[in-house]
Amino acid sequence: MALRTEELILNMGPQHPSTHGVLRLIVTLDGENIVDAQPDIGYLHSSVEKMMEARTYLQNIALVDRGMDYLTAMSNEEVWVLAVERLAKIEVPERAKSIRTIMLELQRISSHLIWWGTFGIDLGAFTAFLWAMRERERIMDLFEASTGGRLHHVYFRIGGVNEDLPEGWTDRVAEFCDYFLARLPEYDDLITGNPIFQARTKGVGVLPLSTAIAMGASGPVARASGLSYDVRKAHPYEVYDRVSFDIPVRTAGDCFARYEVRMEEMRQSVRIIRQCLEHLPAGEIRSKVQVALKVPKGEVYARTESPRGDLGIYLVGDGSDKPYRVKIRAPAFSNLYALTEMMKGWKVADVIAILGSIDIVLSDVDR
Amino acid sequence: MSWEIAEKLRARFPEVELFPRPGEGEHHEAPPSPPTPPAPPAPPAPKRPAHEAPPAFLTPGVVVPRERLLEICGVLATDAEFGLRYLSFVSAIDRPEAGQLEVLYHLYSFETKDELALKVRVSREHPSVPSVTSVWDGANWHERETYDLFGIVFDGHPNLRRIMMTDDWIGHPLRKDYVYQDPPWLVEAARQRQRDIEGLGLGERA
Image 1: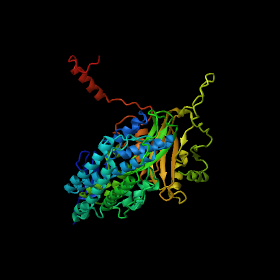
Image 2: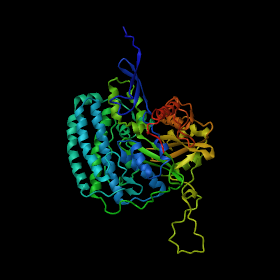
Image 3: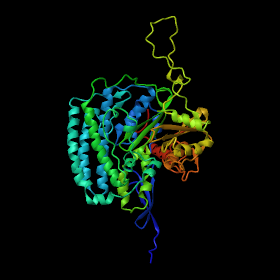
Image 4: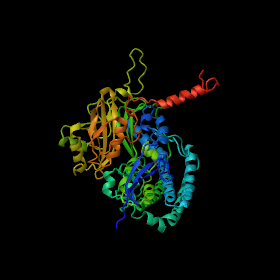
């Protein structure tokens, strides 16, 4: 005799310890099975795009730094200065390009570490978080030494960077690279090879490639589904065309594949940093740019590979010292949209595993 | 950054209009001339202000008539000649002086690494365009966001609700003429607080 069941609607969030911020998930359950999962967003919307219209190009560096994804301040600054430099046709000195690349890759490692730690917590492994924070702390110290800020740096400038690297900083980065690479096998011992972890992530929350593309997913989420696309390779900026690195791609499309892609990306980031340190050119760190820069009329779309994916800015300049319109293409926004598709058919206990595997930051989703 | 794809599209659909190309029909701004010896009698050569130069569109793009949007998008996404399978985003640009909103789409092809911006011009009064969710599923949330922040109605959208602002929000914040007003309860709360502290020497402006 079949058991008669009724659908149950479960609200997760907006205040829930494992939703990674203020996300509300409306999960429709049939018994333990997920029938539907609809994310409800907007709790952190601060209309950064509107605020940017009232600030000068320089002031906006500080705004994108904290108004967008708060875990990847450097990546936000990068996409903004890149868009402005392209529209205003400003050259960046070679040394600044290398410094920026080092910073961006350190930022990628630090962001992926947060994800690794919180993903561990989501699945009940608390140690991972402590280890990740221990390593991230070193990156924060490096950032603090060079930019003055730990989370929000306001370090990039239109046409370069704010300050040159302090004495001995590059040695400290090289030291960190050695230290960090030696830690990664420990991570694998603790989490990657853990049978409980594998049971909870392998084959769970599969996102097929065609769905990933149709939904606009990008970054590690799309690469785990088999899309071999990374903006750093396809449309290189800074010095990415001169360093060698691999784009990890998996085809399984499940939580474990997304995990593997990010773990490998951290190794590749170390590779990039080492090459940049080796070939760090001397010279200027900033080209001469007016403080009240007037950007010519025009439109441009600049894109970068942030730790979360394809981060772009469509900039409309009107010849004044403030942008006319800025559209921020946030990777987490599209990746979160794909969540519904990943969740359908899985058990309620998998909700947290799947959500943790796509690595969203709500200030990136909502802006 | 190749304009070829935009030209291919125009060859197929003559009614699309390319964004003005860099260097096409524009007077290049004279390179900053070496400091001319001060010649007092001649009026200083007016340096052309940036806002007078014609706009430069660095991303290839086309303006599409509203009626043909769905058809053109279908071709762009599925025809092997274009293969623009990836929709980066949907958004809009408000142009109050022209009485228009420009709905903006950005498309990308992984195979050829081509990108293409699409614009559809609609009136500010009753803006509506067909939804492209049937072509790119990912347009769903982007169109909701554009509806929320600009008030553009996407016909045929499966779930056109506000996404960022609350459901009872009035107005569309990213429009140029949008003015934020505190809700009445907040204004009243602030007034009450002023009454509470009156005479205490707090919060009074000289």
